[in-house]
Length: 588
Image 1 (cartoon, one colour):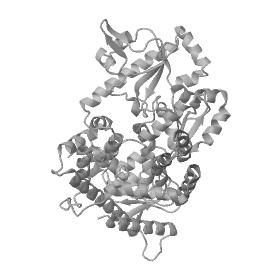
Image 2: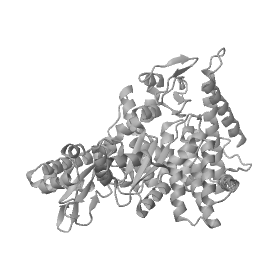
Image 3: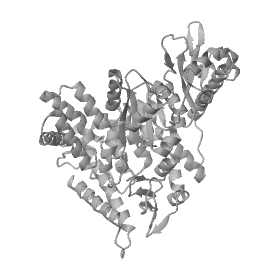
Image 4: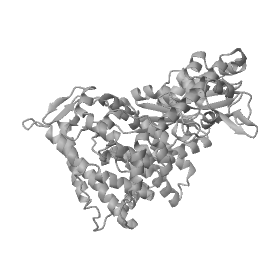
């Protein structure tokens, strides 16, 4: 029995959930006010037989005991295992890999102390003068653990028990023909933490205008620039509380914002926003504002970000249609705040804070921004240009649940393109039909021998197919992870969808899921041609979705009192759920 399975058998979901909220029994199920959103009518249901939970209100989500702990504690899957192991008395063996990471974290922590001591020394006058010039006060410098790379770091590390190969593996020193040298020298140091506060790397700025101005820790087993948001360790609580995150480009932007009280600001490390960074924010917030320069380069960076990562947010809006949702569902919100040309957030915050507040408060919704910017970059006077603009905004417009908002953007496009609204609607219908072509199925039913009663069999089969056929990724971007009942399978599915390849997926997984991934990779699906594989995949996905919806229907109906009619909002949910179930059967 694996550690995950042992914890699942010992962690009773009623005990775990009731330690956070008060549960009231309703038939064989338990109900409560949802702990994840404000509501008056209980919509949170716990199923002790399946050891699962689901919110039938604004959240529209659910899962098992692991997913509940992940959500209520705002932690990842690996952390939820440790949390529940402690609750249930399951002993976790410390792996060699865990010991290795402890050693690496400790090396960075020792280096951090060295850099901080340097900045506080009498020889750091020039560095402190630079901080004063940039408007950074002593308290803020201390809060961000700023430091200075001077003196002999290598000797300090050796004195404190850090081996040369360890220091090299975390990017603190570099080997040359003449021996090891400090990687950072004569630079202002910006420690970079993961959201839990572990030091995973450093950013460094030259103080004498030497090139390059900024350097980062090279890629290591701890440090991957694409996965990190600078300042998230300090902003995590604020983002979780306000559900809003502001994303800027640089270290100084974040520091200036926090010093002025904007504690929900993080930075993308100077890169276009990546899927991994967006994924980290989606766990704790649902409103995101991207604050970038208004010049051409800033616009290009924004468009690259949207193209490479923000589809995660857009798809999550349409995903709500795939799982149970209601009209009060709070979707992810994307806005763009353009900083005046020639300025960056750091400069604007320090020189004109009221203007910064105004820009943030009046940030532009994503679709409005795209229509405006792309209209300047595309020849919308030509038929080809008109169609190109429609194609770019079609996925986002159609992902909006609210018909009236969809209608608003159709009118905006009609006016911008100088065409009739019916022409825009016709283009949307054509694009929608093309996107649905791959869903058409023949008479083959290749998975009829799979038993849906066996827990996880379908989910495991789907993952095997997807891992073996990465080309299917684009076909299933809109498929809801909520249809997976096991958190470990759901986690691998989400991470696979957001990873460029298997190697990156393996690096992104918590250690406890690595063995499961290897097992899935070794279980090759039966030999089928590509057409048959796609048929099999969508039969499985459809059955998982239908089983999920039927289980939700069963739970929501079982908690009704037979002599008391359900309240209006619950009645609406039942009606919508029945429609979704009917639709799932029509896909067969």
